[in-house]
Amino acid sequence: MLNLNVIGLVQTGDMKGYYVKPVQDTDGTGGYYLFFSKDFSIKQAEGFDEWYLNSEDISKRI
View 1 (cartoon, rainbow, N blue to C red):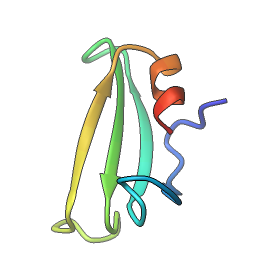
View 2 (spheres, rainbow, N blue to C red; view 1 turned 135 degrees about the vertical axis):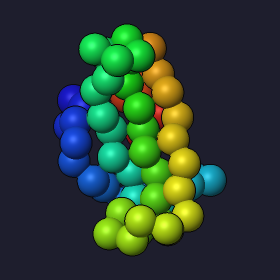
View 3 (cartoon, rainbow, N blue to C red; view 1 turned 60 degrees about the vertical axis):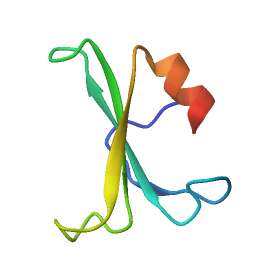
């Protein structure tokens, strides 16, 4: 199950050490974002996003 708007810490893989936050944006883009950041409490922290069409695709990624 995908927990939207909940921040988690990536434990393995190429994003290990980043925090991740899945966000539903079906009203805006029609899909979902995964926001990655080294520290969500710092606006200028290193980070980026990935966009997915549906929650099933996000669940495969995280």
